[in-house]
Length: 89
Image (cartoon, rainbow, N blue to C red; front, side, top):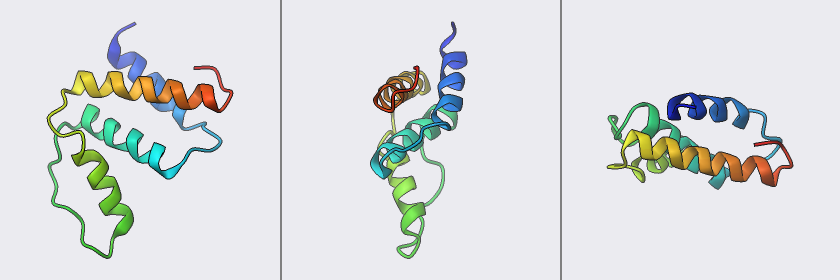
């Protein structure tokens, strides 16, 4: 299976996670954005937008990572979370 296809499958499966910590969700978000868009291309949200700022920082933390590497890391993290939740990876 091609990496992009597997990535898209796990991106769908993650939506069914019953519970995940905010930290885990931010890791997934950052990897997803890096895999689909590449390096951060927006300015950092203002100090009063804490959620937007946390998401931006999660994405920024993956800056420089290739899109293929980000897809691979996303798949690995998604597998861990799905298995921890007792769902089939």
